[in-house]
Length: 153
Image 1 (cartoon, one colour):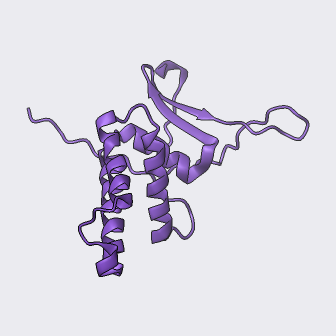
Image 2: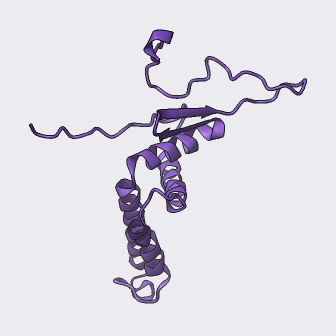
């Protein structure tokens, strides 16, 4: 029986205008978070380091002194390609977790352990000093809710 290909988990975009420069900035921040994540292999972490070394090294495929704009554009293109490859080859669960954190803030933290998927929610303190319950309709994810009963446990 052939093995079925797993679909990548899609993290919905936040509401509002999310332009090209915001996506580039998000990918750079994602690469930074993945670089510090222990789930990403050390061999893969070499890729962004090599890209940074290429950008700052005096050796270039198109020297900036001779080709002006093309010399700078090739550095930007190689660095961007390295970041895209690094982000796409990183473990999917780490990428999804960090993308959700970037897009929806630190309110939710979703991770997996031996018992399954765990969703940590930060409660905000109320004005009287006690912790308030998280808002029921503050669900930022576009995934369908599942209803569980006591017999399912």
